[in-house]
Amino acid sequence: MLQIAICDDNRADGQMMKTLLSESLQIMGEPGCCHIFQNGKALEYEVEDGQDFDLLFLDIELGDEDGFLLAKRLQSSLPASLLIFVSSYEKYVYDSFKLQPFRFLPKRCLTQMLSETLSAAVAELKRRENRFLLVENGQGAEKIPLEAITYIRQRGKYACIAKADGSRNRVRRTLKSLSEELPEEQFFQIDRGYLCNVTKVTQLKNDKLTLTTGEELYVSSARMRELKDKVMEYWIREKKI
Image (cartoon, rainbow, N blue to C red; front, side, top):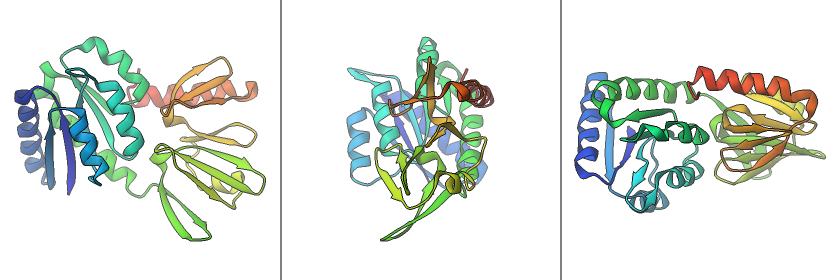
């Protein structure tokens, strides 16, 4: 069942989104449950208690709370979730790109755009279901969703897989063997010993890139041009610019 979180400090707006989403789910024949939160703290408490969400509909202005900071924390806690910003203030659309949301919805267009956005989000979630990296360690094996990986670093005989939630997987594999199992349009070698998930890049400046986690990685000059092309291609394809 699809789990959807709606976080909006305006009770009426939150209820309207729930109604529209519930109606769309019924038409699509998709089972789902919408949870309304009037502040970010309540939503984060729910996540800390173990509740998972597939879709996050977040207002940017949440009273005294910063919706962007909330979104950044939730992306770390729920790296596989799709983030959709909802706001009455379209001036925020460019600032939102840094967090790479799946969509940005102006509140004035909710009635017209919400159903299509939900349909596209469900399709994307289904596309991602079988996209994972299987790794083994001394304790067993783990399926890591590709969307959770930010970069992979080679150190000697081991590779360290860095994830959006801040955790790491250390596996006895070479970078070359791992890269052969990863889609080349999504993962790119930025320097000797580093593979980067281009969908997690928020900025390219001089000889560095910035990830959604805020981490910066060095990019060799020989690879920067091709990396820029890949990142721009992704941003355009996903309408990030």
